[in-house]
Image 1 (cartoon, rainbow, N blue to C red):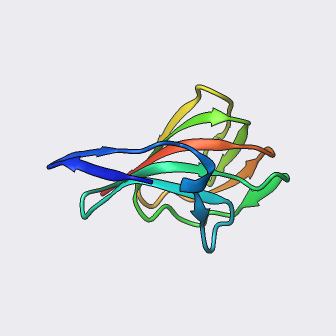
Image 2 (cartoon, helix red, strand yellow; image 1 turned 120 degrees about the vertical axis):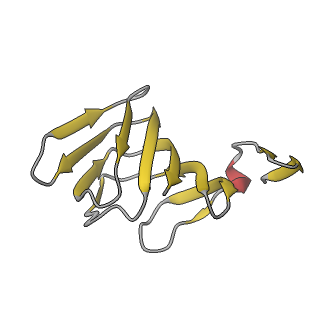
Length: 112
């Protein structure tokens, strides 16, 4: 559960009870912060190999891989291979396809 403890300060815990299904994408998400400027939280994939054909990022997005691995094929660009500790950032409008290992988990930040 996420709690705003003071103006501009949010805290949370990453226990399993704090995750909810992510419609349209699959997997489970845990939102730490969500307002008109920024959205941040955790996302984990189903426990199977999972492919996400992201046609276009709707926001600027930065991610940090916490568990598992992801292959991100950038349309017209390289293919990224990220594991735990891997960090990437994408501008709004970038098109890509994601292939996730079972147990993949990321921390993400959306802005813009």
